[in-house]
Amino acid sequence: MTTPRAMTRRRAETRRRVIEAAYDVFAEMGIRDAPVELICDRAGFTRGAFYSNFASKEELFLAVYEVRMQERVERLRTAVAAATAAADPASADAITGVLQDAGELFMESLTADETWYLLNAEFRAQALRQPELRAPTAAAERRFHHALAEILRDLLSRLGLRLTVEPESAVITIVRLYETMLERAILDELPDRAGNRYLTDVLPRLLTALVTPL
Image (cartoon, rainbow, N blue to C red; front, top):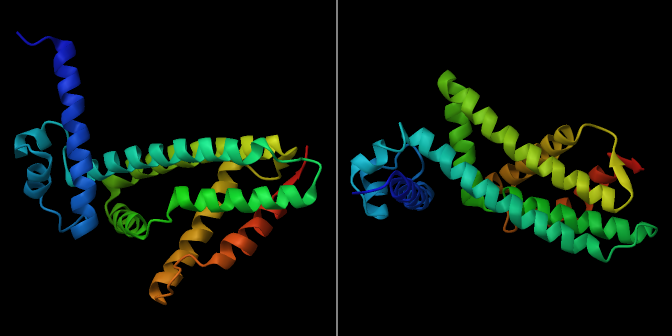
């Protein structure tokens, strides 16, 4: 007889495999055109496994979003801690360098992956059109932004700095500006996509304008 605990582990493993397969299929075909059958086939399950865990492809994408964002947050948290460990808070040059490095880390953690950005853009357009998707989408984004805000606040504290605006507002500003520049680079078919100038010049200047000494 199967115990409830074993059932819980099995269901978690099923969800994990479906989520992993879904990202691959979404990346290849887009969210709208991705067949549920193909996702299940890639995961090694039937449609029943899908519908016992997710009510729709949109709910599945939000699960993919949560998993991938959590992975990026953890990588960023580790990288920021390492980048600031040897920094000298008394040195303006060191602070500028760390802010530049942090900018690169933030961008890598956010949407440096063009495919992931395009999937997010597709899903956000759906959420804007479908009222039932707005609340869960907004909640997922808020959780991600809150996690990034905590990392940014910790980074600046290590450098003897603090934000002059709410951390979440700073994160939203950084994210949206980067997404705009990435979108422009994609439309213009620029080879480096995001553009090094944003990482080496614009973003550090933006961060500098938003901080003050403790």
